[in-house]
Image 1 (cartoon, rainbow, N blue to C red):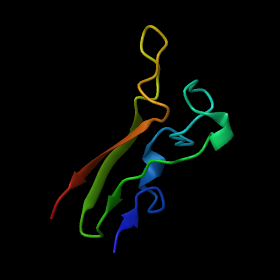
Image 2: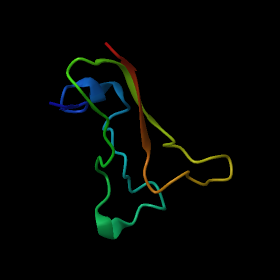
Image 3: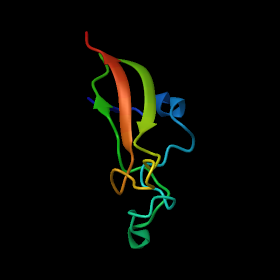
Image 4: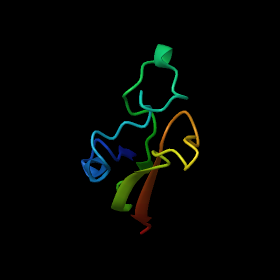
Length: 79
């Protein structure tokens, strides 16, 4: 059985509120509903979850975002 990191409480380590599809990203189509999480990391219960953070959630120096959604980076320890 897999667990969803944000439901296990580990996602709170990310910048709150943890949205990966955000209105502040001009590539996110508002017709799809923004300001929500659409990216998750699934792990089995045996996997230890370390730090977790949003990545690619800021534009580059020229103002461009890498994607229409932000990434999730998690440190995990395999059993």
